[in-house]
Length: 466
Image 1 (cartoon, rainbow, N blue to C red):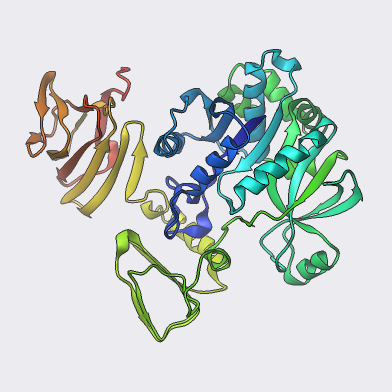
Image 2 (image 1 turned 90 degrees about the vertical axis):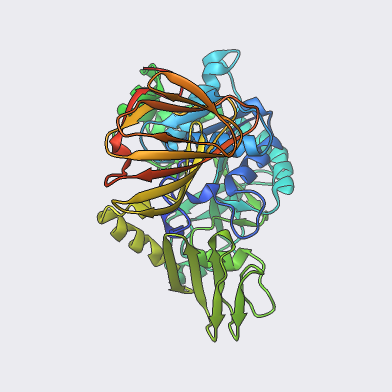
């Protein structure tokens, strides 16, 4: 069995926690130990070997993926992370994973692997039970595309639905039709008729999948067959197309397996209220917060910052260092409108979080003042280095707070140990490198009137390539 994990989504309805460069699948919500992506990866390991898990994502998330898997304690091969040149929705992403699986197969295009496709941004509380259900339903892939339906808990207007038809086996039904996200009254009607929520989780045989794609969206199959690499294939796909619209809604070979796995797509802050534990006053909040005469609220803050409420009910309060969201419960779907308006204004808070991940590690912005200074905490993983670069308009001061840094300035190399510091003047070529066995951490103070990323001139990248 092979696993394809889709990890390219942005989760704009969970702003300001979720950003373009740090989306919801990588966030650790509330006091959860693992991110949604990490939970998904661990679920994949219940079904397949490490080398048989493929992640399809975009270039901004590639090293987030690597870091998330490393945090779980696994040495994951970079070749299993497939980077989409551009977002084309789920069908091209899944086909990219299938194409890679087939190319690596012993019999190349004649192999018939079973593939399970997991979105990385869904919460599933019963992973082990779900893994056993998947194994028990694998035989259905001999002649069917399998999807997993969730029995609705209530009339949800944010999910797609599907209607079961004739019984196919002891655990599955032929799908009669797919339904788009309904209004409330239609959702009530769907539940009365026994419809299921569409989970977006699929299982299929690679051969049957390719046959159905060739029948219903031949341009996608053709793009991959005629291309030498992923970039070329995606350039030939002219439209964004989901797997539901592309093949599942058209195929007569789709089977739904009903599931009860504690599923939720966490599509808005309101869904948090369905999932996370509440205290005796109905509040979802960590112990650090103080909520007086307040009921049925969601309160989240960054880095343990104290939030105090007095006499409020039914609010969503999300606090991070550079933004504060206060919203009535039941209205959080409108957060996407806020995100879109900020995006139109080119507000960087839609794209960047104060913490960003790079091939060499990550950095976190501690403090900044435009046209004056910016303070970062930089973590460089063992054996990694930053690009060889210079800045035209800013000076930098580095203080090593953990580990030892190998610093290159204008081709001169030196070692800077914990507690020591060094200055980098504007116009000096420089590089930071971790040659130790543990993580290197430095505090970087940038000073100048222009502190933007485009002030960098790179002479060599993080891999020493000119």
